[in-house]
Length: 112
Image 1: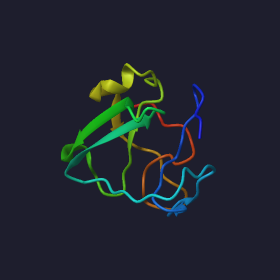
Image 2: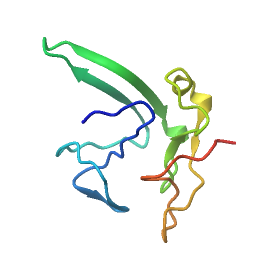
Image 3: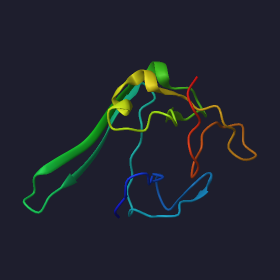
Image 4: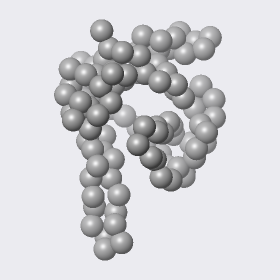
């Protein structure tokens, strides 16, 4: 799957999430995110088997709130901006008829 500048991917475990089906499937995988903190990395293995890392984010348990997504502010979408932890915040948009907060399949809100 190729993402062009300005495009986004919705990553969920399995073929669907509790919020519905993703529009693009990147393949079957299983992963989990640790509520105490973890690191996320985007990378690609080139034809020579060399790993090329595009980006990485490490979060801590201080960021985690049950039922609330962590989001990059909609006005801070550059590769440099996403490295600044101050540009990330807890989501404030209610997801459909749930009590969860996030923006699956939609643009993030601007962090206050």
